Structure formats: structure tokens, C-alpha cells
Image 1 (tube, rainbow, N blue to C red):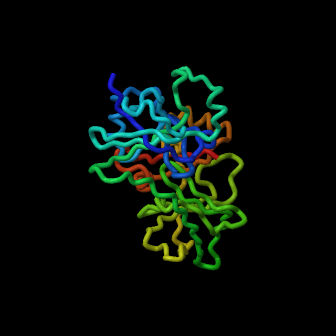
Image 2: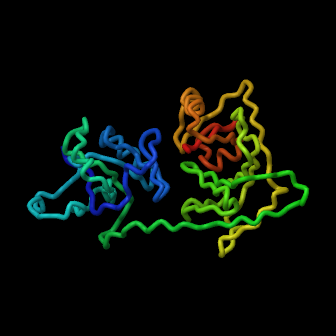
Image 3: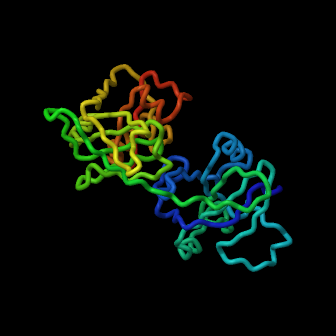
Length: 293
């Protein structure tokens, strides 16, 4: 069978440091899901690429293309050849840092498997290869304002994105570090108080939409606490869509994670849920969005 995929250069992110999520893992370096492509067929991978402009994934080495004329060339372990293929797709493999552990590990998919990930991006033309830009992080400073008698007492501030939650530390509750690419046109900010003992969703949480244009060039933004909203969770006789780190899960899976105290969760009504995940889902009853701790 003709090999469809190839690589050029690795990156330095280590897979063992990533969080496991349904269908793969999550890379904190670039804030993206890393798909497990090893069990997928070539056709399934092509379908995934058709619906995603940029994909990270893990794949076996023996499914990668290496030109025969270069087979005898001695390459550094991290430097592998590449070529242009139909559709203009290029792959760049991302190895884990623990090489000794990889050598000891025998995967059921075959000993030729390289434990790593593949970065895939569309490309056209015959120009030089463009390496991915480094991740740039913004340190946002929230300057709260509002009525002096406002009852909101918060301990931290979170920004919700589809795959990850960015949250301030208690000691620096008004500062949030977030990669530039994760700052959306409309951002969901959550002012969070103490967690309730009974695990009630949205208790002591206050929500606010913040437009990107309100973030100043010095990364400060003024937020009026009087404009925040409480969003009560009313579960009676309603079905919800459940998400964990951006992946849809079942109610049973959600309840198990919640029972094990492994996640933080939010109930989002329709307008908030569509802001995160788009209009492809039916969000009339809202969604429950969870993130691994």
C-alpha cells in the first residue's frame, strides 16, 4: 500500500507531559488536542483532515513515507525527509523526550512505531517550509470596577475555551496567562468564589462576555462586576450535551469523573455554549462543560 504521510522535523514537546483526553491527549504548549491516529485508517485520517484545517496526532513510523533514494542516507534521529503530496499536506513528527523509555516500550501496533505525534498543516506551492510559530502568551491584568456594595467575592478568574480553561492563581487572582491564539473575539470570563461542598454547578460563579477589543495594548482590561451574570443550573427534565476538554462525552462518563473529583464543571446556556462550540450542536437546553484539573 502506498504510504500517504510523511514528516520533516520534530518539535520538542514531550508526550508524557500531556493530559490524556478522549481520543488522544492535550498539549499545553500549543493548546491543541493531539489525536491518536494510530488506530485510524488512512481514509479516516483523510476525513479528519478535510474537516480540520490544522491537526496534531500520533501515528506509527511504518506508515510514514521515506523516499527509497534517501534510505541509505544517515540522518540524525530527529531529522527525517519529507516530500510534497496530493492536497498539499505536510507532516512534522513530534517525539517524546524520554527515548530510553520508548525503546523499552513494545506497542501492540508493532515495534516499528515511533512514540510521538504528527503535526499536519495545509500547504501549497514549492516555497521553503515554514516552521510553526512559537507560542506567544499574554498576561492579562483584570482591573475590576463597579458598585462598592456589589456582593461578588471572587477568589480567581477563569477564561473558558473549547479545549482548555485558563485560570488565575489565588495569590494573583487578577492575572491570567493565556496563549494569544486562545484569545477569541468574544471571551467567556468567570469570576469564581469558593467551591460549594455539594458540587452544585455554577454556585458562586459569575459570568461575563468580554470582547477582544476591550483588551488594551498593555494587556489590561477594565471589567465592571455589575455586568456579570449568575447562571443558575436547573437540571429538571432536561437533557444536556456534556463536554470534557472539548470532547463530547456521555452523562454517565461525566458523572463518573465528577464522582472521582477529577474535573471542574460549568453549566452554559445556549448562547454561551454556541460561542465555544459553534452552531453544529443543538444547544436549546445548554451544555455542561468540564475540564480536567
